[in-house]
Length: 203
Image (cartoon, rainbow, N blue to C red; front, side, top):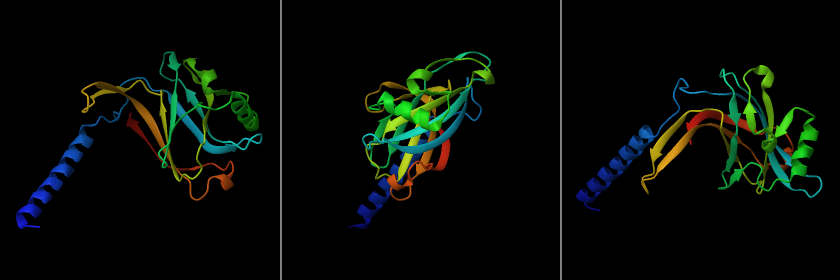
């Protein structure tokens, strides 16, 4: 390759890096101090459940949410799991109600509510805190990294323009929790999955 060609490629690579950095800087991030209401969210553990009836496997997660905003809010959360195998799992999808009930019985917490049960008003104050159970069908167990995205705990939003079609997209402040599963997930049983990192994103 000629010197001119190498110079052009180097310049193009540098420009690509600068554009990528500019895009990253321009992408909205959650405010350091929440500008809108935000619920107090206390996450529990992410674990694996094996249905003794048919051997199907499920991820499940528990949490507590408390409203200290000074006014009643609506609790309608969204829980998505992303795996390093390219899966995007929406909570509750293809999860029999029997399985959710079995996990609740296993945990022995009478205050736990499944995702469909818990949706609704959450009143102000510690006495009105809600405890929730979230379940996903684990279609694949050959995964080593899982990211859990939790939306609905904050009223903070941002609007961006999709560069492909020019449409405006509404982003919500979302809690991202990243997990690591060393080795095969099945032999671990219900041992909690290891949390690697947690941070807020706009998604």
